[in-house]
Image 1 (cartoon, one colour):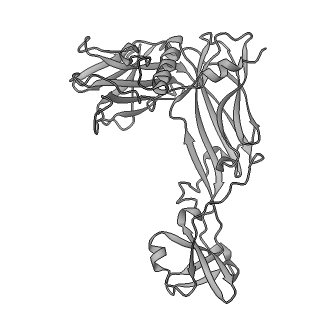
Image 2 (cartoon, rainbow, N blue to C red):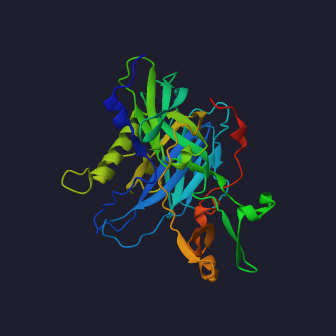
Image 3 (cartoon, helix red, strand yellow):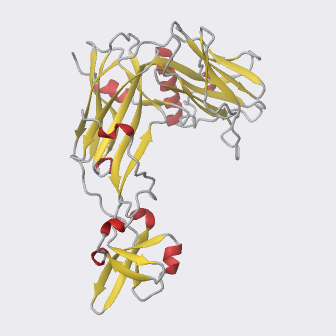
Amino acid sequence: MKRLPLYLTILALACLGSCVYPYDSLPESRKERTLVVDGRILIGGISSIQLNYVTPLNATGGSYPSGDAWIEDDLGNIFRDASHELSRSFSIHTESPAAGASSYRAVVEVDGERYASDWIVPDNPPVIEDITFEADDDNVSVMVDLGTGDSKTGYAGFLLEETWEFHADEYPRSFINTATWEYYTDREISNMDSLIVNYWCFRNDSTKSVIMLDYSNLEGDAVKSFPVKTFPRTDSRNHKRYSVNVKAFSLSKDAYDYGRRLREMSNVGSDLFTPDPGTLNGNIHCETDPLREVMGIVLAGKMTSRRAFMRGQYAKQAQSYVPFVFVEKEDMPLMYYDRLYRPVRLLSHEDTMSVGWAPIRCIDCIEDGGTQTPPDFWNEEEN
């Protein structure tokens, strides 16, 4: 088994998703809004459909489509978003497909028109053989060993779900009684358990775009150490424990080429050599008006997943940039409290005593976007 050539690995880190349509260029004379459909039919997982409009670069403001969308199989079964509401973003459960179904398509109804993708037969997924973590002086990388399995397309897509336990920037050593506005320290409290200090929390994140891999020129039947995620060693993912759930599925060559072209259009900018978005053909068509232009692509694949855990062995101490405000102990702290600052530490200098206040998000991880409810899988054994 041979390692994927480096240049292919680098080129493979393209993204396909609803957040990569920044190249909005249509003539001002174009009166009709062109619909953009980004669909992922993931059999064995959660599928999604996103709707957008293409608008001129010099347009001010903007509007978004609102309609209905669903997924059909060739047996006539329909899979819908659980909300059953008009929207521009749909999340559709396709974990349990109907027995005997072999092909699928996405259907969209918006602005009085009906759009549908081609019928697609999802390819079998590749095999996630292993997930490892590697680090250099500055960064940690999540590496995937991938076996081709029964998939023969030569192209794969990945989605990531991340969860990690992190701590707030500072642990408070000073507190205030809002009834008397008197300060006290943690040493003055006999029962520290009575303090509500949200110092440790859990955070979740997921990829918004598909990470794509081209292994069509692979010699052998396995890709080794393909990087699907990189983050700094000072990142909060390294504070205590980190988990990543890697979801893999096969891509067709057409889907891969579409994503590659989309990336090129997004990165190159607007000049004489920028690809014309009108030449970017997907697999979406307007059924009610065959001449109406529509952009986008729906990809389909059978999904597999594997989870891995990492302790904080690669953590590096980040330089603290807590925006402290130092207040004389006798000063009225109500103004800072109302501005969502909290006391953190007492500081004495000669005959004066001051208190360092900081934004509440610096000492409360919930205010910093975390939750103290662990996920169901958190007690699983590490790989």
